[in-house]
Length: 478
Image 1 (cartoon, rainbow, N blue to C red):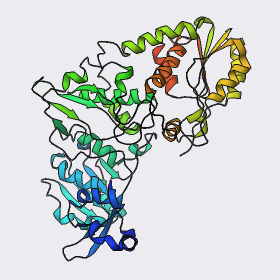
Image 2 (image 1 turned 180 degrees about the vertical axis):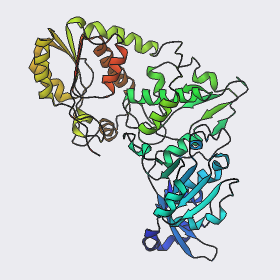
Image 3 (image 1 turned 90 degrees about the vertical axis):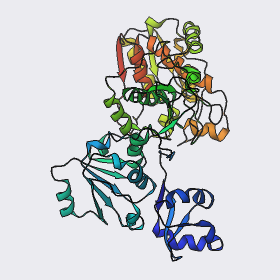
Image 4 (image 1 turned 60 degrees about the vertical axis):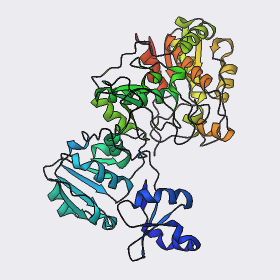
């Protein structure tokens, strides 16, 4: 997102004194778009008015929404139509895009522009018929109470969506990334050929650089169900072309989904590449608030899975490995022992996980209490593997997957990028799916803390575990 950074105006002019003409863009509502290439090359841009005076500085603010600026498809205001009053905080690339390209369709009544920086573009903004537009340098209490009294309102602000609870949404605050994600999700339409003129296909992809496989699965399925509810046929093609390379990618743009899963509605990618109505998403990350709202909206919408969830290659892999690593499922305690990311990085808002020593003691207790003989442990941590092998000897089973030792505050995805290991994505994903599959076959379950694998193991084991214990040690703070 390109934003106004007036506090850096003098600094930028000093640093770039020899190339000022190269970093200047004219003052207008298009200045954010025109500054994109300048900022990519020089780091900042200057806004110059018609008198040749530098009036503002532009810079980049990290975001999870990247506009395609190709809005020839569906502009979807259903989400913001819930609100009578919108507060747009700060004049920036996203707030201007929302006004210019979407709010003419908005069913609300009052738009409040908040912040001094609106002075640069306010005269050039389009008139919004039927909408009261107000500008406030800052929100004073009397004005705020009068404009919100008895009305449903939403504040839209800068901010980087993350895996946070719903508190922000419940306090009527959403990020620009989220609001534009809802509004422009189906805005880019391409005619790729003459086929299927009566069908609208939506390509499901998003910014999933650091996510594990089941997190990618859940977020992609969320988008697919949401798109289906909106009348589109979802096509999964997770290429993650912006941002860092994912654990399961063998290089930039390598497609993740098809390595492991089937298409949820039966249509393949090749089926739609000659179709008339194909919609492509902007770069987004549907973090927890956006994902939760999409799940609520599409709660009555199910995907059909005509060919099953896993593709043939994965299905055969799971079947082949099951007997090797889980010979006595009815007598086995399944254990989720999360190390690496969950122990070394203390991810904000994620569950605190028990140490390997705490798990070892709990295993001893539960084997006796639940009358079990063997242990299957799912762990990606090399240190945990050695510890449990040494402690439980021939009673413990673990897969032969590759395991890792990460540095403090280093995630597995970051370790891969440092080592530049951009191959083996299929095997990493297959081994993760195998571990959860085997956990779902065990008699009982012990987990070091709540995580995606716990939920997936429960989901797969439809009849439920005979016994369960999940450590509840609270959550890491932000």
